[in-house]
Length: 425
Image (cartoon, rainbow, N blue to C red):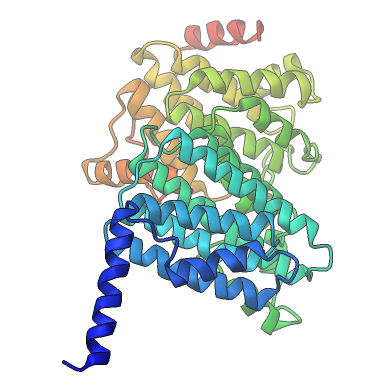
């Protein structure tokens, strides 16, 4: 061995011994030193500097995972990501590190604790603040970063479902995702715009699509449907009602009997929300939401709506509010009211089939029939139904067919008693 090689080996051994004596600290590691220097220099920060910090952080995170230092790896990804947002305002670069953070949390099987949920809320707030501070950012870039944050929140929610203690995912993360979906819906194209034909700028349209899955619907209606689903699962019915209140009232065409257009968006989102809550056995929040809707949002007289629901000659379509009331009252009774539930679905079928993605609505009503009234779907559907309900933590519902074909018809006495109970709401 040459003298130079011997000296080099002695130097490395000395550094390793010093690191071991200091408890394994890596503060003298050149990569860590360079990373800390970049993060500390906020005055001369630019995109290239932030990207260098990103690369260094990613390498340190991966090294931490490989060496089994999982806590160090996840903490580093979080602290560097937060610094890039709060101190440097580099949203695009930080979004890549946030995606890496969720991957590492899943890869290392890090539990979803209250502390990590608090951290996720902090990252969400810092991300939105950084976007708002950059007033010069182009609209297309702002939309792209919004979509990347949407993917991050979906991934974080899925992680909380798999490695947390709350069914369908943490409530706080559901609220973050629901609010972000609603904000995104204000900037997204309407469903009619998407169906109207080719865009005048095909290249821009292709660029917008690159952040979505191939078959993902990016319309405003789709995002609002996702938003109300997550807000319902966040157990914040008051916040959900506040969002529904911002939508316009139904038009005469939308409440006309036999209408061919979809129901009013506000009404259909209420129905979707109530069915979601009933499907996950949260009748408490479903009732809170419905009472808030009837007292603060619905402008039509409740008594008139009740009478109209049973009338076939007034030329008005069945009311979504009354349907939701009757579903909840039925679910609060015994399983013997299954035939009444089946009649409710049949009587409201013309509205349910016109709601956005009626197959998802069908899945909700099927689950409700199974949970409350023991109306079993066909055996071939059982696994599909359970898998579909398991996907709620990820922000979507799968396809489902059939409602189990519950036997029996409506009991007029039950119907009359229910209508009398509804007068007290």
